[in-house]
Image 1 (cartoon, rainbow, N blue to C red):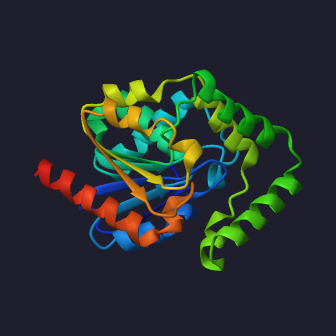
Image 2: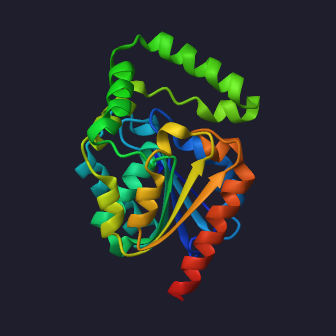
Length: 250
């Protein structure tokens, strides 16, 4: 596995945290958390297939899970806390359900909307738009939104433009019940949502009820990219959760 497809920081023997980015983004999305957590944890932030350094690799869920399993085996000693935002959060939940032995704890962010039934409409619209809209238009729209919502420093971390790859990722989660994925995972789960991210909060109570060891935290005044809306708060939540599940392992 090429090290060019992921960033690795922190002590190699420390408890590992995997950080999975959102649709169309790159591993740079997690830069504030990776820097802050690497003093105590072995932090690994990869590009998902069809994004960033893996732009030419198709996003197929089974292949993505196999790739993530290999990454944890080779770089994290076989077990890690796995955190993912948006598309990365759905990958986190799917991976925890299929490979619970490799997941010390799961942290899904901004992904408590079921992509089934009426809820699938949100995902279908996003997939259609990202697949068919002209790429220059998508780039401009994303730049404008980033400049409007975030500081210049934060906006620069949202310069992944893998829209077609992002659409592949969204299609891969359609018609799957992620509430059931959470229900089948026996380990601890920390859900993190932006308080103002209403579309992706719509089923958060169902997700929380399905978790065997679950907790929900809302980031005040935050939207979908909550890790950049309040980097310090999200970092603290991840650190405290990782410390608690790592202490339970020892």
